[in-house]
Image 1 (cartoon, helix red, strand yellow):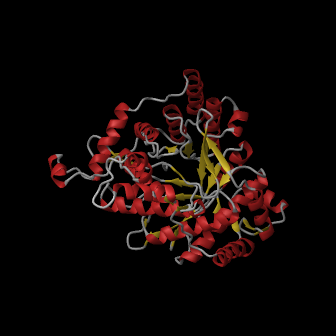
Image 2 (image 1 turned 90 degrees about the horizontal axis):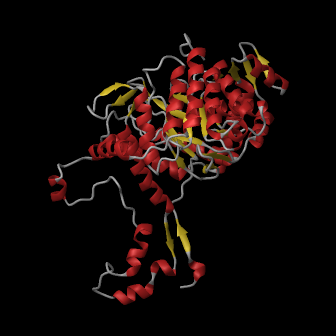
Image 3 (image 1 turned 135 degrees about the horizontal axis):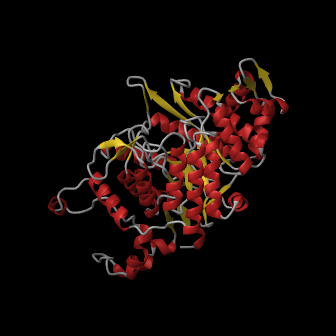
Length: 489
């Protein structure tokens, strides 16, 4: 067999054809030029007017297509993210895929009782420790929202907990520019100054416009702050199809994309070339229950379309996967998380967040993160594919073993086993008798046990004590500055 026949066999997927991509893109441009977006920020409106946008009554701004195209061209096609220690960790570009957690879940499944309760700061710490231990989790986020910390200080407390307990890149939220600036100051301490933070960013800020087609003053303040400080920004709409966006998937995609592109325009006008990870969510609303849906096939179609659009633009793209509408780690949680991770990986989604989310983005559990890591490992093996060539087929080996023989004792089996066969860490492959003897554990039970074990055994990777002292001092300043402020935006 000749070497020229060697080939790597990988699954491939793309939803939209190029004409379909262009149709959706043109629809988004037309929305921006004719319908426009409401911009509730005086400075941003002035900046847009200076760039030849048309100002309409009621704070509406109509953005010409040429300006959108300029923003797409000026935004970086690749955004590199480092860890707390300055090592390159994620290069968000092309079809590279990285996986991590989401933010701010109001409820947590208690590790001891298994009961739902309000999330607290300890849950943020637990999530950071568990995720730090799992190699499949590329970046961390708060997972829980600390309801035991008052007001906007909660977002700063989240960040302090994460930066203290893991060196992995941090995906974070903030309520307003004021607490965002405290967070950036903490990050600068960790890296050795603001210049080094700009050169080696280890954090990504998540912010949203308001669907449909509104940019709040608070969201724009945070967008401008990130642009000015060269902090990577993930500014993405969370449109609900049928409620805050059209019920048709095509209409929802075009509207959400217009929101995302208008945010990109403002960002690039403020600081050309500043790093942004874009995209959108066009999640359906369940009309019978009035809930946001994370685990539906229609949602996955909109995410696939989003990835196709942003690969067409040549821009890093965000998405959500590894999440479920289920309230516990049951069969529904397993299939919804698995399907979404598989689709996001085949989509080539660069920044995949929400691993471990349950209950429509309201419930978190370290065990859910553990289950998500197992699913990511499975999906990565599938996406890697396999090689077809003379060394892999190995006709000499087959002839040597011959009819009726076995391959267990062959050195080639040991050499290639871990490369060719996926070996689970959590999934059950025992004989049924052995499974019964072990107490018939299900996946949720094994995930909880592994999460508890990681919390007890994972070695702490804490930040240097002098940097910790400075971060603690910034937190004390924030406590004083944010007295009496409750979710100001």
